[in-house]
Length: 336
Image 1 (cartoon, rainbow, N blue to C red):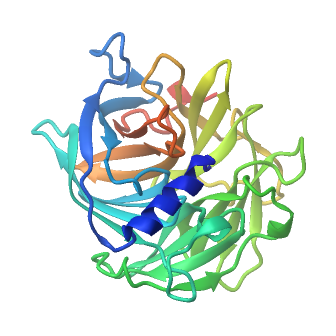
Image 2: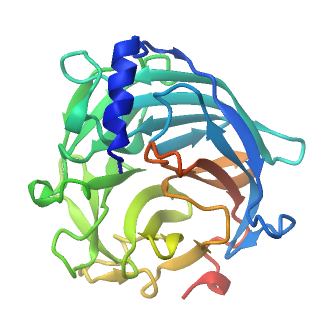
């Protein structure tokens, strides 16, 4: 999601010649999960393991809409078409404490130039193996493959090649498209932010190479959109976001061990029945913002869930990176 201020940000960057790839200075500040009770670390089936507010004087920074965590490194994309690579830092107890080796690079279009305008709204990210990543875009709805090399050294030069998009992409609303991607063997998941038809469930497409796409209907709660997907040995994780001026942001993280295998007859899979588990709910009063990125990683042998917020280039919002341990994942204690 992008604010109107993005147009001005890109204009300034273009005029200043700041579109060259290179290191970027990002400041970090640790934040508690509960500002009023900082000693508290539990939320649903998750256990807080530290979080950061990310800021930078570089006018290109912001709008981070998806990420992948691999070991102690992070790859993220912004909805003004930039790549961010960084090294994650942890203390002796495994708590997230900072970023280092931060690098920014423009995401290129088919002409080898930095994507701009409606073509630049990168939203979803999924590894395809051997240094290749799928990136989904909204406004100009599409999915592209970028080969950036296993060590991510190719982010500044990678060129896009088209990948199959879900059926009905041409009917998506401009700012409610393929918001999220996640890997699956032989293909990828593609999540649509809002229902294609008003009042219908959200669509999560199972895109298999050479096969007809399969759809899972995810009946998110009223007012929530799908902003992120992740996969691991635990199954498919869904990041859901709600926002209103009166309430603010609300976030839900749900999971299902096998959405397609357990749903051969294509019935609606509700987030609150039929095998979906509610792992955690973040509410106003907690450290919360417009979370759009989600990824699973491992720190000192402990499985971790990371979430990342998109500040919409709005000075009233924050870029947050939060880390959680998964002690209660997929247990009935946190299911509904």
